[in-house]
Length: 189
Ligand code: ZN
Image (cartoon, rainbow, N blue to C red; front, top):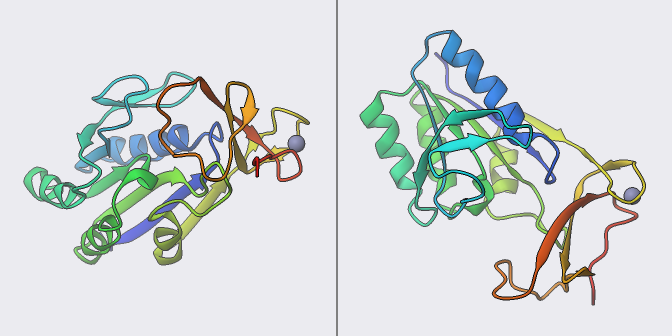
């Protein structure tokens, strides 16, 4: 196989994990040796699976996001031909070098992740991975306010729009997220 990098990006609730699972299933049906990884901080449902919001799932390996080199080691050890990476925005910048290495070696790499954080800023290694990709798919959710296509992540802390300076990981307080369009997206000053 020729190395190939595809990126599936978009906001929360846009179906990124669902699309990653759909594409990975096709490789599995084609009997290619495939492995899916995700950062170990994503404990939403299960440490050993990737889930979409509609309940679909595939087995996945949890990797420390600070050590993306572990993805390369895993791919070597498993003799992988296809590597799927979910929630890629949480990995350290070193993931860019790892992905380039895998693609140069002829692997097919599928990356899914948030392209923007709650304040609409490019998120972690995603913009670089999108630039390097052979193919980029940007999925849209539906705005929770007005029903238009949504590309932004609305972060609410105790029901109020989060401030730009609020830490990405909140300690205490109740936070929720919803998809919003550009017009309805709010960031408190
Ligand atoms: Zn809207």
